[in-house]
Length: 170
Image 1: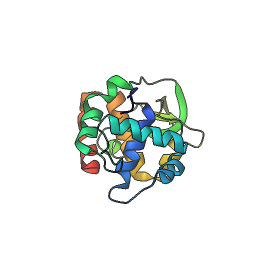
Image 2 (image 1 turned 120 degrees about the horizontal axis):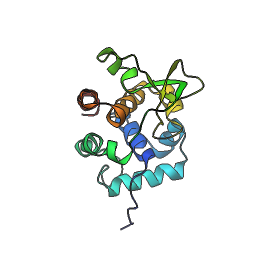
Image 3 (image 1 turned 90 degrees about the vertical axis):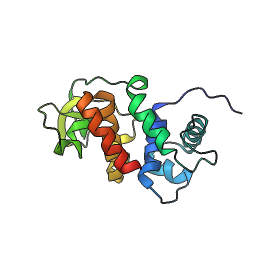
Image 4 (image 1 turned 180 degrees about the vertical axis):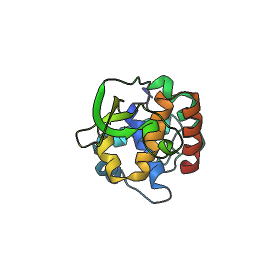
């Protein structure tokens, strides 16, 4: 069995992209094109996720409860994030749907992105290609913004985010 050298942030992005596809079939090349991550890195990501029991051994079936458990209890410790400087970008966390309909805040969080339409405190995305990938896939965008709420949000935002993630993933 191949040695597991630990998860990487892009592994979360790949897993959430698979979750966004729902019951639709996919191939590695589709994930590579849609996420703008090389095919070899997608392959390695799937291997790491399989070894971490977040994907089945055939690397096609998402282990939904394990992924939700990791997101809820581990993500903020493994990939923590603190808001940074004010920049132009794409809304994330409580500044994007669906949380912006539930949580009112004067502080906005954004992924730094030249084509973004909001100014806010910078949140580094899990992978540099995240903003572009989210422009192509609104479900992935929602999943990743909810995930950022787990990384940077307070307890209330985290609880709402995990509830919303369960609605989409399960």
